Length: 232
Image: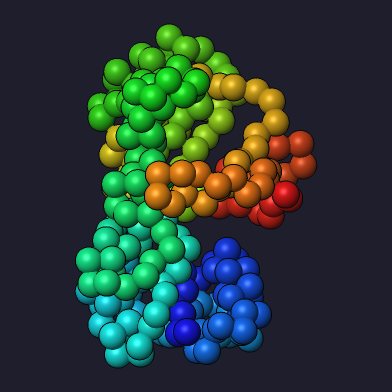
C-alpha cells in the first residue's frame, strides 16, 4: 500500500521508520519530512499539511491508501475530516477530537464534564481578570496559552512576578493567536506521565506509559520546550 505521513518532526521520523519496515508498504511519502525521513521515505516539499484539499489532491494523484497525521495543527485544522469524507483511510482524530489538544480551555471543560480530576483553573480573554486569578491561586502557578504553541506555550511560574509576566506576554502576542485566550492553573507537583492509547470504535486500547522531557536545563529549572526526548 502507498502511505503518506504528514509532518516534519522527530515523531514523524519514528513513524516513517516503523512504516518503512512493513512488508505491506509499497511507496512511503513524508510531507514535508526531514533529514531523517529522507532515508526511509520520499520527502514532499511544498505540500501544506494543514490544507485538507491540497492534501487530498496529493492523495488522489499518488494513489495513497493511508494517511498518517503526526502534528496537532493539521488535525485541529480538520485535515482528517476532509480525507475521511473522501473515503481515504486516516490515522488521526477528527477536528472535534483534536480540540482536546488544540484548546486547553476545551480540554479542561471536557475533563470537568466527564469527572476527570484536573487542577483548578480559570480561562481568560482579558488581562486584568487573569492577573487577579494569578493572585488568587498564588505561586507557584502555571500560565498557558490556550491554543497550539509548539509545546512552548506553558510557563511554570515560581513567583507571582514571573506569572504576571507570562500572562502579559501571552496577551501581547508572544504566541500569536494561541495566546489570545489564557489559562491560569493550579500548579501540581510530582512525576508527569502520559498514557498512550489507540482509540477506535469507541474503545481505547492502552499501549504504553511514557514521560516527556519538557523543561530545559538540569533539574527542570528552565523554560518549557517542544520536548527534548522521552522514555517509555
